Image (spheres, rainbow, N blue to C red):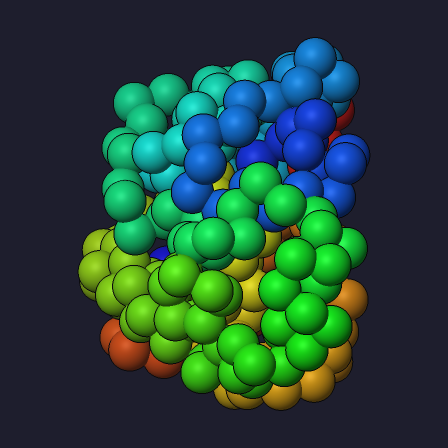
Length: 194
């Protein structure tokens, strides 16, 4: 069974470098236009469809032409707590130049007042294993943190260094799930034009 993970389209906060986290920031007009011009990879156009509850993901799923979308809270973005709505520069100015260092590294990283990365990885793993127990291909529209977590699960990357491969967030990350074995089937699969 394969699952294609797709990040939501662009928002105004993406353009500003603001951390959205769990805040329900909508797609920008540019984001809507971009996603309406694309579709899911051909292998997944009629697949079961899941989405994060946040509107930017649900709208992206609809714009890609997905139907009968199942909303699953395990696909929510990383909860960045007190840092949501801020840029990196604003966080460092407010909380000190060592703010990110104090938050920990790898799966121990916990944004100030937010969700430990370990918890994010656990819920993504739970989603992948549950969905992967079926036989139907699946597509899920979600967020950067979820894609990075899925990549870490599939490759063993510990999130302690830059990713060993570039994960293009404008493309799909395709995983193959056999029993409890999760692996990357294809990295950076383009979303074809309509």
